[in-house]
Image (cartoon, rainbow, N blue to C red; front, side, top):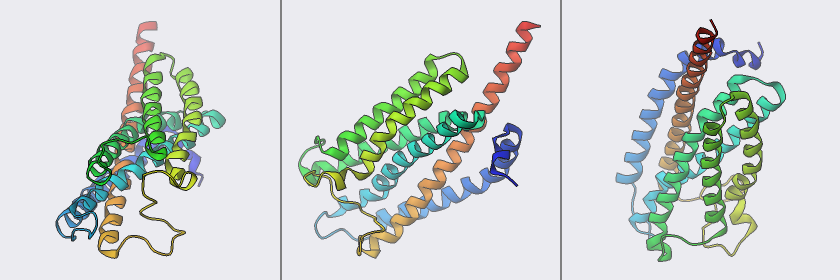
Length: 242
């Protein structure tokens, strides 16, 4: 069985029909458990006080903002190489989801930064690259909307996605590249001996899992909508020709 079979819109629709109820249900459970646990049942930090609890929204949303663009890059490359329409539509469907995560990350980062840094915004390397990534999300969506031919739109947005991936990587690794930035180091890291305390770490992992499943749920829903919209457009075009 090849994974490429799901590039067939019919098979993708069948697969997503079975996956969606489970993904949506687990999303609700994990987000409710993680956020309630994090915001109401964890102590204040000895340095940051209750402000530290914003990590349960900020960290998962920032991670998914970057990872969504990485997913868009992968599906865009599949479109360029193999010309599978489902991959192009999945990239298109993911963009508003990624933009939403990006805006949540920027807003919660500002709410955290004001009491910690004394300012809502600083031209820190990570923050700046993250802002540029946000503009790329807007540009990607605008380019899809501006071009009528879907294949041409998929080609051009795929190129834009390749360029924007530079800033996705900068957003992820800016703290490592520029040590003088205000932004703290990674909250979770596989190459660090110690992360944050377990009392914060465990509910944070639950929230991250919830955000990942939220992403999967929303992208599946939006991709299904894009496929149906494409089918409807094709049917209307045939009727006009007839």
